[in-house]
Image 1 (cartoon, rainbow, N blue to C red):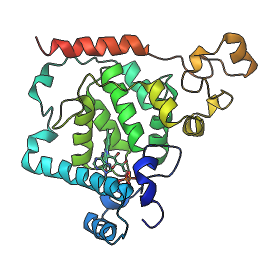
Image 2 (spheres, helix red, strand yellow):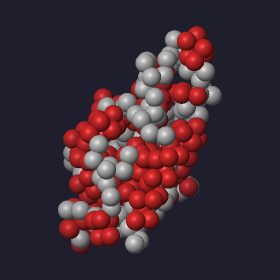
Image 3 (cartoon, rainbow, N blue to C red):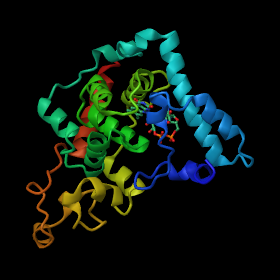
Amino acid sequence: MKKKIKDYGTARDYPSIEGTSKLSPYIKHGQIHVSTIWQKCNEIKSKGIGYRKYINELGWREFSHSLINYFPEFLKGNYRKEFDKFPWVRNEKFLKAWKSGMTGYPIVDAGMRELYETGWMHNRIRMVVGSFLVKHLRINWTEGEKHFRNCLLDFNKANNVAQWQWVAGCGADAAPYFRIFNPILQGEKFDKEGLYVKKWVPELNNVPKKFIHKPWEMELKYQEAIKTIIGKDYPKPIVIHEKARAAALEAFQSLKK
Ligand SMILES: Cc1cc2nc3c(=O)[nH]c(=O)nc-3n(C[C@H](O)[C@H](O)[C@H](O)COP(=O)(O)OP(=O)(O)OC[C@H]3O[C@@H](n4cnc5c(N)ncnc54)[C@H](O)[C@@H]3O)c2cc1C
């Protein structure tokens, strides 16, 4: 709190730096109470933007818990009932590629591998991989919720279900379904140098930063020169962003009929 909270407002978005508190597993396992953190935050003298952003996040945690307290049906399925008729796709191959970090989108794969290897994943990347599952692959958010439940050290029902429903667009105060994260732009914005990707997807170590979030755009000759063949050393994208985005929007439109 003494050193990091000042920059939390901006640092929290960059997965290659330790810009967040990483307290969630300790909260989950009862090693520290949220009210203790809240109290400590209040003792900080200069309450700048970092402080405000941080206590906001604690507020989101409380909001999720409150939601399931007052609306326990939230845990059972879509809060917004119109999503019960959403045309989800069942595709075991895509689901497996997503879980194992083999989608061909480096920022998504880095996140999924970080989760599997450490039991934790950066919040921005949770949003990116979540959006990819429910919008690019159109796989039901409950599959993602189940996988996170199995892997996360900080798993708790309230946050996990509420956040997955937020990502899918079917929760209370959810991100609109038509807000579809572009995994290439998210990578270029929040992992500009590709450091996070290279940490978790080492087969892309030789790829220059210009291509690190879209390695399939490298010419074959260049791929050969850097010994990184896309489709052999690292997968080709399992879906094309523009097409997947258009299909997701069309599926969403069907809810309105
Ligand atoms: C799809 C998805 C699933 C998630 N599942 C869980 C989960 O099972 N358990 C969990 O604790 N968090 C979950 N989160 C929220 C968030 O990603 C984590 O709380 C955060 O990454 C934990 O890291 P930290 O302690 O460094 O957070 P910091 O940024 O340091 O935040 C401090 C604390 O605030 C709370 N917090 C932060 N962000 C959120 C948020 N978006 N919603 C609710 N509370 C938040 C957490 O208790 C966190 O420890 C999920 C987010 C998404 C997008």
